[in-house]
Length: 418
Image (cartoon, rainbow, N blue to C red; front, top):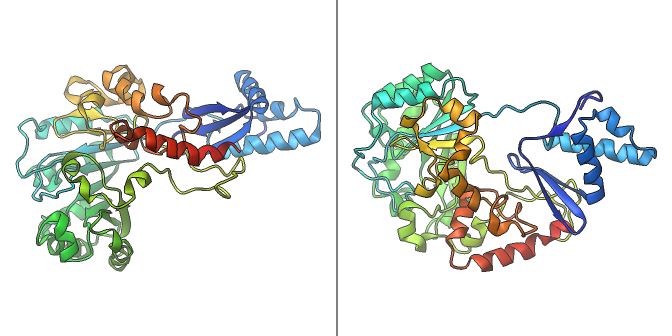
């Protein structure tokens, strides 16, 4: 934080007031800070007047005030709530190549099946998607499905994305279709991988993913490692049947040199037909924010508030479905949140960077359920701490016991204002 730099609010800035206090937040990284309303009014006036750090400090006569405000500005800049230059968004697109999958997992949130969909984009249309992404600042692209390796043109499409955009590629797969030839090409094209397992052996895996899947997945992983794969993760969806094996799963991942990913049971697709699989007490936990950074449940220091809403959906994350429909997130592929079809756009860069997507019905519906902006939540003084994910907001909207869940969370998180 340079003394001569002019600071401004981050593009992800958000403010909430309650009882003479104000919490300011960055809704992209979840960092937030509490101050008095008087202090915020001073800060806001300085920001509106485009003052430098030095000019802000010098408006105070008392040394204690100077020290406090200098520390305040430093923290807010560290948290990226305040910035000294215009921020450029780095995007993370999810490319869902197909609805087809060789497995029939009972918890599949994509509701993928053996048959491909006639509406799927063809090879040339996927090439066009890559071309329409050109010029965007993209950290990486995640290619998934269904099972992306089901497509005969998979490697052709992946190679085109890699060469056209010169970026890192991540593959999400069940690994069961990997052989020696595919593994060599995958290691050449992709920078990281995520393989679904959902168990620690044949017995625990087959309950969800089908008989024989565990060994096929493990064989695919071994082949990939033999070809030089280094950076990969194993995912495990926690259910009533397997939650007791989570620690053993982490050990298995460590033995394989993989990063373990424990996932909640996503209530979408076929999972909605098997809600009895949701782990005990998982419903309320599903709506929990990230781990606390505070110093106790009954008092939080201003710079030790729990992580708040930090969902990149509708900001830097989006998905392109098998048929070209664009959504704010791969978990929010519901008709009401559909932005547009990529075939109707000349440029995805313009669509997002010029914020054209904010004019769509899908985005307006998304804002209605996203707690910081939802009309239903605007009077709630813990609305930015009730969850960190927009998908959970969607789920909560459809819960019969929504009011009960909200009451529990309000009671729990009111401690942030004490």
